Length: 79
Image (cartoon, rainbow, N blue to C red; front, side, top):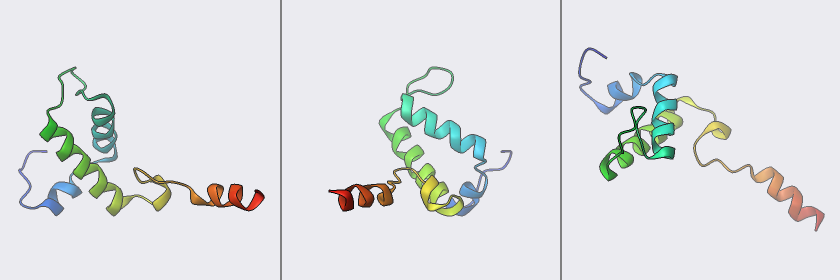
């Protein structure tokens, strides 16, 4: 990214699927690829970016935190 985004929408549009994946991995591990720990603020900002990206570009079942309730409902019906 050569230019600094002027808005959150521009920033979101500049996130590629590869960057999205790396942000998710950094959140999960608490570290960047180079081993440096994420600060609390970085974790929060990464989470906001991942959630916003998911909301804009991914289907419901691929979003972070998705729970497949159809399987839960089938278990309830069997009991």
